[in-house]
Length: 287
Image (cartoon, rainbow, N blue to C red):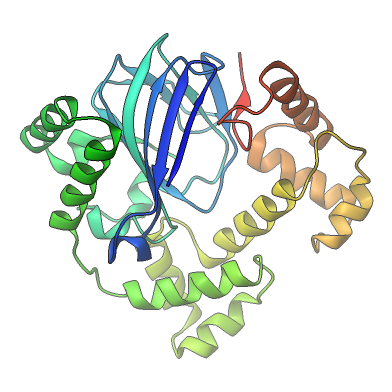
């Protein structure tokens, strides 16, 4: 269980009970005034569901996607590019950080249909069900009871889509190697064709195994950065398995829209303006 109250933001997070823990990294409660009205979130090997209980927020799902307002919340499959999240002056919500494959058991459509195209929770679960859930959450007795209600709703909706075991296992191998495993080896080890594996990945995660591997490698590299210290970009690129520094820089811009040096400048801005904030690990100020 993680609980923090920093700069007017209350953040409560916990790992859900089994069997949800095999699909979900954590469920969380967020309320207050975020550090910036607009945050950029670089892509990570994770999917997201937010049930909004406050004023609408705005989401832009990719560099060339229009910003959309969301009142009831949103559902985001694993993104391939950075996305922007615009907060109201005061926000309140509960949410779920899914493992890459974890959202699939709760979707009525293939995950690929939502890739870089966030939708409302109503579009996934229907308006009556979401309205009832939001009412129950809004009248719950504090964040911990709210997270229990959210877990109960997820458990009730849990199903086992075809091929989930295959995708869960191969995704785990990709994660364990930091994205360095040859994709052809995955299909051979699983006893399926590379085409079948790619189709299952797109159906249940929204991207191909190769794209998931690229995202794992990029995420691991970025999290290894110490924005407060000096950085040898050439050494970092080599250690991460990139062909050279130019390849790393191209990959960085493809994922974030920023050069590596600009990314560090923005990260340092966050650390300087909001030291120790609950959000200081990944989002970037975009305003």
